[in-house]
Image (tube, rainbow, N blue to C red):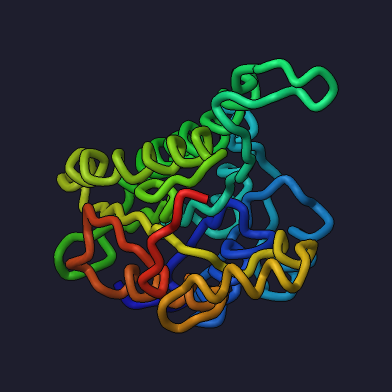
Length: 261
């Protein structure tokens, strides 16, 4: 698939971090980009800078996603590219002690459920709704390809650390749905690929102590630094352009294998 102005894309979580870098890179190749995010101030700003459109939406809500997709399609037509970057990364142990009493307590189930709802179910919701529209469009590649869907998991899907039961299981779910969804959509010419990023510099790290950031960077074998959002976006570009990439999960991590904690 050649990236140019004939293509439309939707990037969830596109107002910041990996999603923003992806939106900017796709737009730089002429792709008409819609940003689906909950942050209207930043979403409008990024959309204006890349000549795209901001579509406020909550990936946990069907009606909200439907409205955002409708707005994006009204502006650009049906998407040929969907990149799922919306997500959260909470931390909580399965069993912990209360600070005041020292009593043992179990992981908060509402917090666990919310992590799954946003990261896993939210991703699948967007995939399914996007695929329905993509499947009805004319092919855009010589192989009969109609589009590509890219999801974002994490190396935590394979190397979940202490306190990451919710986050890791949500990301493992995304990795696990990649191949069956690719097989489901193969007959429609829609490819599905998941990226498992390692430790990347996102807005979260702007609020973290510099010494802690440095210690994280040193854990990466090579290059020994945090990943750059545009390096994630560059892999998105490569996936879009290489039509044989399908049903795969790709680690983008500098060879890191996360320690227990």
